[in-house]
Image 1 (cartoon, rainbow, N blue to C red):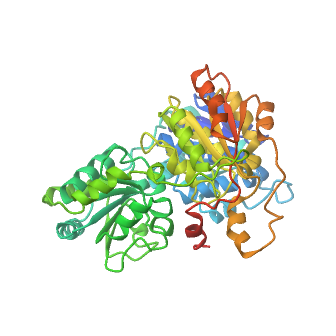
Image 2 (cartoon, rainbow, N blue to C red; image 1 turned 135 degrees about the vertical axis):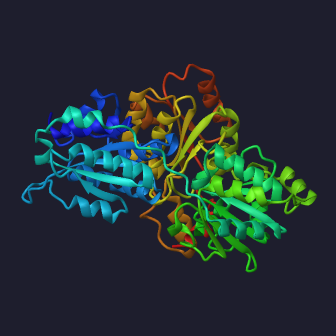
Length: 547
């Protein structure tokens, strides 16, 4: 058995059951070996799309996924998606065949490329160690929650593995991560802070996602009277809880921002407390006590100073504090309850509809789609001026309902995000919410949607521009020729890929969406929504303060 086959079989035996990629000469055999061993391969139209699909699949499924690319140019094509995955601590293994001969057209320093975008770089160095080095890469991705570039030199791939069957027989999935136990002194310090808090707010992030985290945090919040919020990546974690503020930060409703800013204690649970989640710190009062809980000690205080850092698993810390906590009203007053009941979300905030015969208000569009589309959904959102509307106006059933690939803030990832998440949650309606710029960057993956038979809805918030730049630079009188484009029929493009498509300018045009939802959904649907061009999103000014 050659190394290429042994690596593919070792990956599958290690529990890597889903691989995305574009196959070329260098990754042909290793990819086929994974498929033969039981893994599912999804061929994409571009390596960038494959990287983001693998990222989204791993985030949504909670398992290690794989990305398979060609040597050199295949890896460079995928780097944006790999950077997003690395910044978001996604457990992902990148199979990167490597041309080691310096005169090869495909030769680049792949190890350096991986490190440059924040991924771990490792290499299969010999036939004798190929299986062990492959399983070590999967274990590293799973245990450290990181993206690993596994370089596969072409000459090594062609070597014969000694006693391959015996080596593979010993391979199995990596053990689950051991929850990090908190120190008693840190638990006691947090319990003491909460015992005296008058207006505590919990902000849960990626590290709190999942049933154990939700249950523990809701019980502790009830005991100490805390209001509940999440970062964008954990949206939906507290869905249905009457004390939930939904998302903190730039996407927060006016009421949520007001209540968070007035908190005397804020605890970030598995949440980085970045400038986005805290509105560059303006959501945190000068006298507010800030606590951060994370199982990675390097994350504590990384983005802002904290008064107390607690190293430990979110659910374990919350349970330990709960055991010492006493019942308090805290922030759960009648006044707060009345306000939250009256204004629970963005769709409850009054606005003046600015729509015309030719352009629909993105708020009106999003509210209508929220009512039309089935509630069991998984949403992938691209980046841009429009992104707050689908993120906050489209409801999600739980914390798995939104896949938010915004760690690198690249446009063009939303469609691939929705594809990867859809494959991880096949029982839900996948919804891709993208801008026209992002769709044009990734339109080739419409073919992937169609080939996979996904009953996907692609909503294009189309303002014929890179809207963020228009609204950031336009008010100062700068020329906008470089960021505005002639109108294009994105609906016609989608039909060319086999989609059903509708152009939406008014609410009445959404009848076609209702018909699609009620029908067999035998083809995916693209909605080319011509949205208002002169409307800057509410969160945009906050976002650009960090640039």
